[in-house]
Length: 127
Image (cartoon, rainbow, N blue to C red; front, side, top):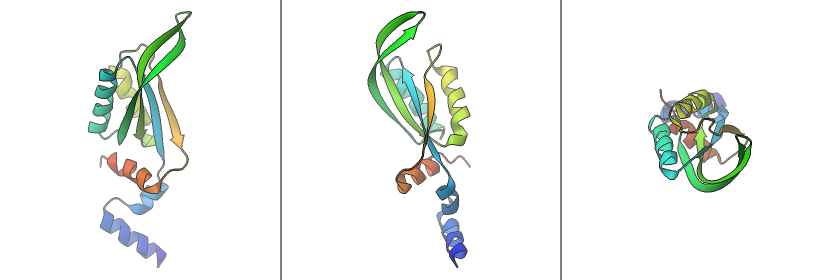
């Protein structure tokens, strides 16, 4: 009876509840030189359904570059994706990012609000 219930929900929803419950979600941290670049890349990822959303915020960075310690104001984004899309996301960002070595770091989400996690999966569905 339980299997039949999930099959009915799967057919009604059109997205597959069973599939969503087993799919994982990741975030990707990316830094940018300015807000305009952060918005452009983030919007492009969402438009292409490679990301469900991107939270953009100003940051202050301290880092070593070319043998010197530097400080700068930057922007960062936390991008919600499906882990299986990371290589596509990384390639897309690298192709248009102005930094020689951009910060593009994936973090796997172990747990989260089920409705939110499902929204990320359905928002990045390209089939």
